[in-house]
Image (tube, rainbow, N blue to C red; front, side, top):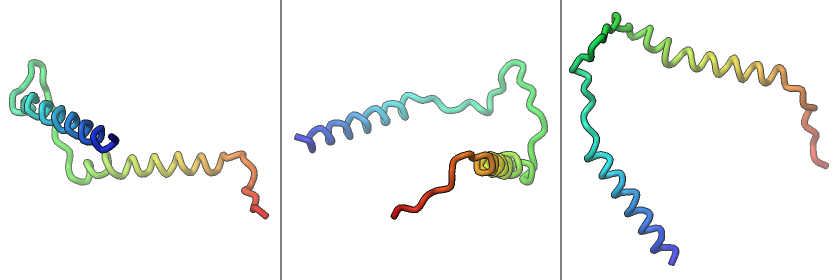
Length: 79
């Protein structure tokens, strides 16, 4: 009975995914909207700094603060 439910769930998931793919319209990135005023593009270095380096640095800062400000006792070894 469990195999039948898994097959049914897979069929529903596949069907709903297919319907979403068929119903979506393409992104109209070429057509400009009213009031659209894009600025200058980013260079490769700016893009990498903004979307790669900045999140990594923020993660390291937050992780470092958590480790430094951790008030819990040292781990005790099990005997």
